[in-house]
Image 1 (cartoon, rainbow, N blue to C red):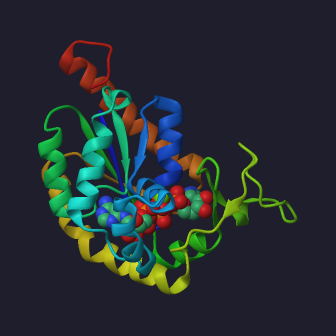
Image 2: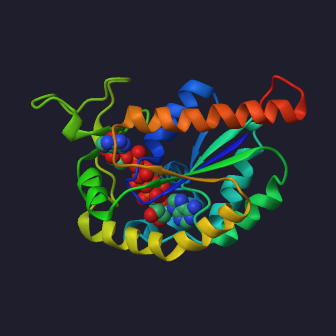
Length: 226
Ligand code: AP5
Ligand code: MG
């Protein structure tokens, strides 16, 4: 089972990806997290990506495609995986088909207005220890900016500045339509309203996902997910 999360910056891909992973056990693969880790580690890949990420531009297709190809070969992805932030271009989507052409697939496109995106991203903090995603608006006032899961310090992402958010949104809107058409033609596309409570969004996703998993199990005659 391949689950793809599309959506604008700040639309909730990471948040829903974590919830799906927690319930269904598939690993969440965030291209942004992998790139940020490579930047922090100072790897050649990280050095190639850093300047573009700071400007809110897309990292080149070949760099990102190679990174995802290596990741989905790993043992924990054999039964399924969740892609958060990949593919972002039609070239990435076509490469993904070639990497793994068979098996069940479902694409959730989380829809959110640009103004709500701005508000959410401005209030976002990430745990520097476990990458858990927080929103300061949802934390009690006066609470210290410490991760409640691992005790790590909460930090703001370098690309979460208003001027960079604008460029990230521009790049997103330039690529979106082609990807949506591609997945609609494959008949795997579902649009999810993102301006709702996160638990409600997750509930809606689970309804579709449960159906898709049951359908995949009927097709293969096994209890395993593809
Ligand atoms: P990436 O890390 O993927 O960033 P993004 O797509 O811009 O998305 P975000 O991570 O900002 O948002 P999200 O949708 O995950 O939202 P979240 O759940 O955190 O990419 C970063 C950069 O890396 C790119 O700009 C590019 O340079 C490069 N890159 C990555 N992938 C690439 C690729 N494939 N090709 C080329 N370059 C690539 O939620 C946001 C906030 O809202 C949080 O605070 C959260 O707590 C809160 N929230 C979530 N849901 C709700 C809700 N329902 N109600 C209220 N608040 C909510
Ligand atoms: Mg994210």
